[in-house]
Amino acid sequence: MKDKTPPSQPIEVTVISGEGLLINRKPPTKNTVSVTVKTGPFLSCSTGVDPDGRSFPSWNERIVIDLPEQARFITVEARSGTGLIGSAAIPLTDFCGGCLPDGYLSFVSYRLRDATGEKNGILNLSIRVKGGGQSSGCAASFSKPSMGVPGAEAKPCAGVVTGIPVSYPY
Image (tube, rainbow, N blue to C red; front, side, top):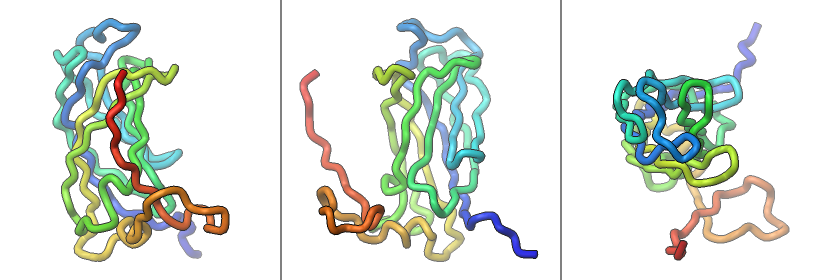
């Protein structure tokens, strides 16, 4: 009997630190903030809690988790106890594919949004696709990023739109 699980490859996410994490506009209490990394609906792994970081926790904790072939992003969530502080969806194109070689270590920082969509802190991470010296499926699926929005005649999911940062006065 064949195994029907979709192919996947491991990624290594190091949760480095957080900045400005708040609960109801107040710093979380000690020993409560952890981070969960999700690569699919049933694939997740969490860090331990930072013993004294409060709103500026530091974990420096490595998580190795499978990345399903059909995944297009990973999700990181900062939690305090059972409550969500904030989350961010990280597109795979930010750390694999295109010009990045297999095994490249990417350092990324993401703004978290709380349940109402308000800004609520930043998570600092490093991410590496553990390709094992082979061409990773991640790099193969995102080998040709395109600029702009695909036209009506383009197939859905035919390419990846690359964003260009623009400053915005708040």
